[in-house]
Amino acid sequence: MKNWIADYIQSHKAALDSVPVESINSLIEIFRKAWQEDRQVFIFGNGGSAANASHFATDLGKGASDKLSKRFRVMSLNDNTAWISAIGNDYSYDDIFVRQLENFAQPGDIALTMSVSGNSPNLVKAIEWSKKKGLVTIALLSERGGKLAGLADHVIAVGDPHYGRAEDAHMMINHIICYAFMERAA
Image 1 (cartoon, rainbow, N blue to C red):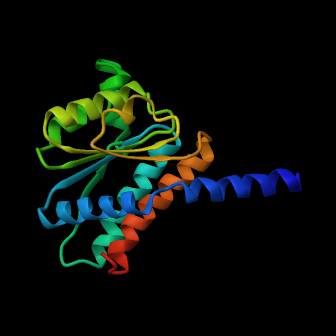
Image 2: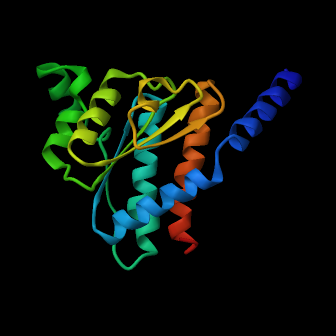
């Protein structure tokens, strides 16, 4: 067991090391511009990435915003269970994010998704729609890339296909973005 744990930690370090600093810096600049222009930020994912979306929205909307002169306008599209279930029931589970974006999104807003596979139909559909409507699209992925790798304007693909390590690295990226504002580095 100790060897497995040591190997997991070593692989985790390698996954974190695969994240390009310059790409995170670019995302911080995109978020700064969205904040300056009072743009809306939409974050969404499935499973563990849904939990990361909620966490990121909380940290950006509360933690980072508490340190700034005005607040980030941010929403996790995973957080309204009644709306998600109504859309899934009446239309399709593939529509649970795009139908929410139809109600709120404006050109210049940000649509950020997180996915290890990069192929979830509901995420792909939301990013396709967002691009057509002039949103800035961001995908945090694993090395698998998937369809989202070729769709989003800005892609960071963690160099590991493992769900746990990729999702952990995505949360690290999210924390770096938030703490850039919270610690006034941005």
